[in-house]
Every structure is written in structure tokens, then in C-alpha cells.
Amino acid sequence: MNKIVKALAIGAACAAAGAGAYYVTKKAIWFKNYCKLVDYKIDTVKGTELEGKEDLRLVAHRGFRAAAPENTLPAYEEAGKAGYWGAECDTYRTKDGVWVVHHDPVTTRVTDKNYVVELSTLNKLYSATMDFGHNIDKYPYLKICTLEEYIKKCAEYKMHAVIELKYNRNRQYYGEIIDMLEKYDVPASFIAFAYEDIEEIRRISDYPVFLLVDDIKDSDIVKAKQLENSGISFDCNHEKNRDGVMIKKVQEAGLHTACWSARDLETVKLMYSYGVEYITTDCVTY
Image 1 (cartoon, rainbow, N blue to C red):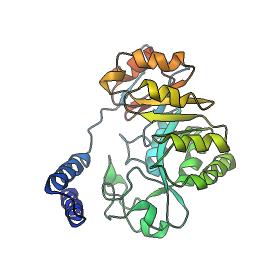
Image 2: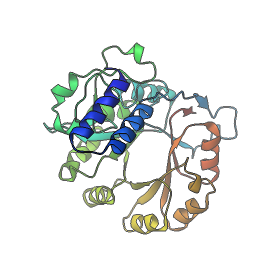
Image 3: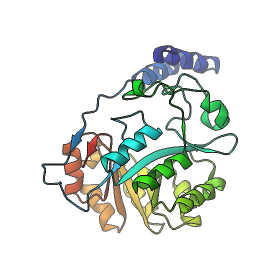
Image 4: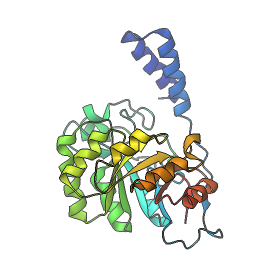
């Protein structure tokens, strides 16, 4: 289905649910813009002052999404081939108890079907075919990726798994993810916007946890400090983070630092100069 038509369908659904005209229009416009494919410029640190830096940890955002459709096995395959230190994914648990890799709560943006991930079985999700992303024409029958497949790909290429827990749900099943990581002996970190999510990971494991934020606030630092082996992962494109002042406060508090998502080499250089430990990027490689 055309993405604009999907946007109108979502607007109609909002209207049917009783939303006002302003909200419906705003939601449809947002979705139309969200569905635009970003024209990433693939760049490298080779030939720059960052080449050979052993403490430069680049994390492929949703896999190497500038080379293959996001959050898919080909994206993680390309990330491994490019030599990324780590690969980030987003995960949900399906109706029949399978952890899958997907960014949005619905499949609308990236597939030919409109399913709610958590309300669908894995077989139902397999009936949807990916139709969005860079070099999508190379993958005509591409399907959703399970979390176990992602973890196995990280193991194959010795990449650090960075797992985003979505939408503050399914905490009682987080042990299933820990079991998969231990099964394949994959090092990992967990990230989430909901503090309660990383709090639960800390309760059941020793994996590093990061509180996701847009611009760093003092209250975020206070929250993150309540957990051991924790840090803050912030938006490196947010203007309030670009001067490094709040990054330094995070570091002075004894917390780890990570950022998302660098879209150009200059941003990678800037974050590295501030001592950010883990730099998630859409298109910059070693």
C-alpha cells in the first residue's frame, strides 16, 4: 500500500476513534514525513584523526541501515561486514511469545501490511513483506527478524548487542532475552526510555543499562545513578547536548555515556572529542 494512503488510513482510524480534525491532520502529516527515506551519506573514519582509535566504539543504528533496510538480517549482516563494534536493535514480544526486531509498534511504515506487532503472532507477521529501506530492491521477499536471529548474527560477527526495550511493557519476560544472550555468549547493553525497564534488567542481570533521553537533564542523571553499571544515552543531534556541558556532568557523576544517532562524520568526531564511550550512527563506518 502507498505510504501516503497508509497515512490517510491512520488519520481515518484516529477520526473513527473520536480524535479532533486538528489531531488527525497533524498525525497524517507526521506519518507522511516519517515515511520518507533519509538519504544517508556513507562515510568512514579512515584517513581522519579517528582512524585506528581503539576506544572508538561505533554502533550500527538498527543495523547498517544506510546499506540495507533497518532492523533486518541484511542490515545486521552489513554491519558485521563493515566491522562495527556493536549493532543496535529495537524489540517487541509477539502475541505468541516470540521476541522480534522492529522499531515501530505497527508494521505500517516498513511492510506491505498494517499489523500491531504485539497483538500479532509470528506467523501473521511473516505474512508481511518489507517494502521500505535502502536497497530494498535487493531483498524482494524480506521478512521480520526475530531477536534470536539478531543475537546469532551478533555472535557470528562478534558484535556487541545493544537492545532497546520498547514501550514499557513485557518486563516479566525479560529473562527470555537474557537466556538468549547467554546461550550465544553475546556481550550486550540494554537501553530504554522507561526507567522501569532498565531497572528490571538490573534486577535480573549485570548487563550495562542506559537511560535513553533526548536532551540530558539533571533529573536524568539522578535517575541513572540509582542503578549500578548504568549510563545515559542521549540524542547527539539535540542542540542542548552539542556544547558538551551536560555530557561532562554525566561523566562527572560516574555514569557511562552513549549517544544516538550520528548522521555524519563531524558529529562522530565531536562526540568522540567529548569522551562519549559509545556512538550510535546511521552511516559512519571504521
